[in-house]
Length: 281
Image (cartoon, rainbow, N blue to C red; front, side, top):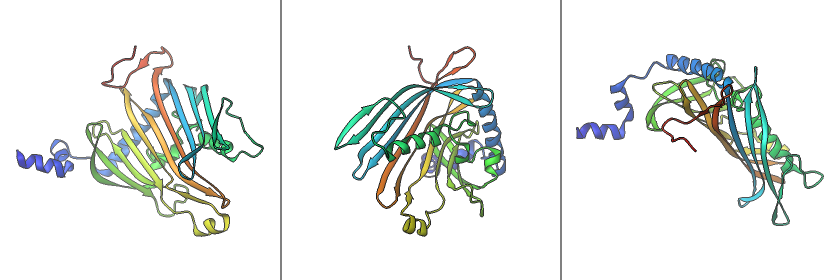
């Protein structure tokens, strides 16, 4: 018994294999792809609340600008529509933070921070072809996206109380349209993604840094999924943090986060609570 506990502490894969051998890589990827297609279909009837926070930080981690948004997200026949229910912004000027309530507000003629915050939010969370707003080509889970990547199974990892299957991926050689490398943690029973982490698979070319004065560091994304009802898994959080420097003088650390909650059926408007989570009054 003591030996088994020791083995469990140093080799979770050994314990997992006693209960059920992990499927072959090809079969695992096929199941994940099929479940992704089913999940996209299931999300067509879900209305939910989405909150976003975008921050720009100057050197020394000093806040330059931030915007908070809250949307009601409603499915349509082919995409999703977002209704902005709440907006709050702050910008720094002369060492002080000032509030504003208009997403189009600019505090000067050329407001780079204001344009960047709006563009970042739109690019990262407003993909109208996606049921959750997150651009699908950032995460290689569907069969179409898997075709652009090479995968390998790298054991298991404890997450949310289960030994998730850990998949590593990188773009196939010569595929310049898919820049991401990273890992996927897959639920070993339902073969749904629990977490996906990505990062750029290449560095910004030296010539771009030198002659254009542009550089991006630590660009990547992290998305977490949860089962919110039978047959329905949904991305509940999504975020990124990276440093951008352009035109030699302008530099910002950009932080963006997204949270999805309050899931309900579009037809009956009935709430869906996370499993093992008490209902709210």
